[in-house]
Image (cartoon, rainbow, N blue to C red; front, side, top):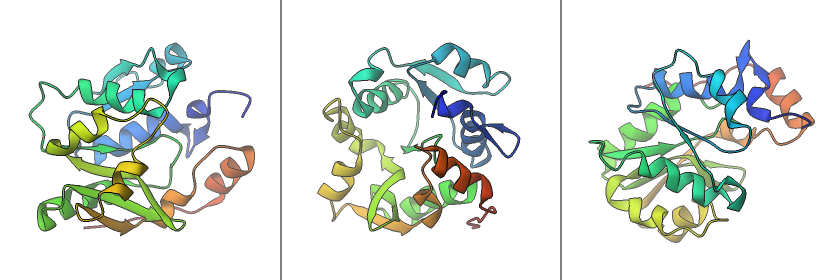
Length: 185
C-alpha cells in the first residue's frame, strides 16, 4: 500500500479510528485496540477515544500473537466474550457487531462468525469460555481455523460487507466507492 493502511482515509477519518468508533458505537466495552508495526503514528489517530491500546511487540510473528495480546487485556475484565474485528474491513458496521453479540445471547452458541466469500471469519464473537482456543493459536494463524474447526459450536451469519478487505490499492478504491450498507437490530 505504500503506507500503513490503517491511516488511509475512509469517510473522512483514518481506517483505524473508523474501526474503533464502530466498536464503540456497537456498545463494545472495553474496546481493546491492538497495534503492531507503526504503533506510534497509529496511536495518535485514536486520541480522545475511550479505548485500551495495546502494542503487540511480536506482531511480525503473525495474527495469532495479536489476538493473544488483545485477550490478555481482557484477563481481569468482566466480559461474556470478545468480538474480533479488523480495521481493514471498513464496511462492517456497528449494527453487525451488535448482531453478533445478540445472536450469541439468543442461540447460546459460543462462536458467532461472519460468513462471506464462501468462508467464515472476522468479525467474530467468541464466548469467554472459548478464549483458550484462541490462546492456543500458533503465531501465524488467525481465528478462521478455530471457527471452521468447531462447526457444532459456531453460527455463521451472512456479512457480505466483510468481503471488502483492504489489502491493495484496488481494494481501497472499491471500499471508498461502496455506499454504506448496514445491519439493524
